[in-house]
Image (cartoon, rainbow, N blue to C red):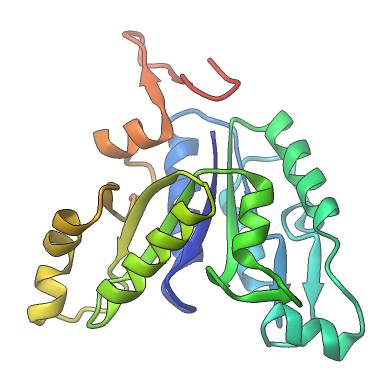
Length: 226
């Protein structure tokens, strides 16, 4: 089972969630791979995904396109005088899906970050056709951004597998203490905590489609793996 991970904004913890999810899936006995189709600036996100993935991957498989310019992909491509070939990215994903039981694809920035003129992260996700996990930072203002992103995912004809509320900063106020409850009343997709490495809650097991047999072995029960 593969997922496309997007954020309601930049710096909301997409890589943190993606790596925790990979580590948890590995601990459940599944072969899994992270993919960062496009990096801009450094490759730190891709390197973290590679470290959290199962064996048998290279950094170029995890991150096929690397712009050295630390800007949105469209801006970086203009500066570096190149364009993104999304077919190559789709082909790379399909190859990983054949080799691994779980593939976690991390987008770049938010849902409408431009990759080239009239082609956005949302368009790449639509071509990949994967269920989408939305990462939101639990802070004042996240309700609006989260609901707009959920709306965008559904408008693209994609399944929204859930919203993951990230808690990277130890902030406690009225907004952070009520955001999760409010979202659960307003949207019809699961609102999930961040998965802990090596520890999948029953809800995360359900989202991933993982079934644990009486012997303790895990298997993916939807998609192409049983």
